[in-house]
Picture 1 (cartoon, helix red, strand yellow):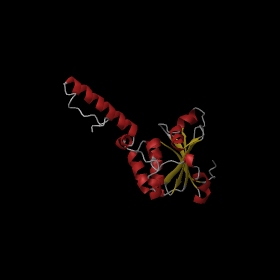
Picture 2: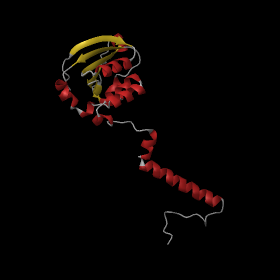
Picture 3: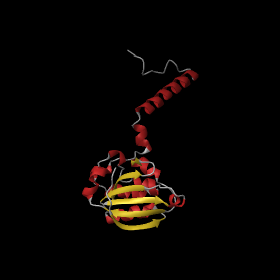
Picture 4: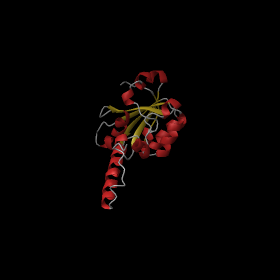
Length: 185
C-alpha cells in the first residue's frame, strides 16, 4: 500500500489519541495521521501507525512495523501513553488507490474505540460518516450476536428439553410430557 506524501499540518506529542481524532473530525481532514508511540521512540523501535481520513472520517489503518491493516493494524499501535502524531493533508484523489484496499479499511468508529477507548467519540464519528459507511463493521450488541447464532440457540433449547425431561421423570410426570420431536398422531 502506498500513501502519498502529504502537506504536514502539525506535529506534536499528545497524551490522548482522542484529542487528535476529535480535532481531525471537527476539521474535516482529508489526509492521514501518523501515530508513533513514545515508548517506541525511547526503545529505538519503529512502531508507527497510519490512519487515513476522508472529510474527518477514518477510512483505513496500517501498522508499519507488523505490516497489518484494518482493525488488526489499529491494535498493533494502540498503546497507552503519549504518542507523537503528525497530521498531513492529502488530496482525496491521491488517496483513492489506498482507500481501495479493502483489507486495510476500518469502520468509522474503530480508531476512537481502539486507539482512544472513547465510545462517545466512536458513536459521534459513525454518525458523521456518510450513510453508506455507517453500517461498516457495526459492532453487534451481545444480544444481537447471540440471537444471530442459531447453533447456540438450538443448544440451549436442547439443554432445556433434556432438563425438562429429567424433572418430569423426577416428579413422575413422564406420561404428561409431550415431546416435539416425536409424531403424536
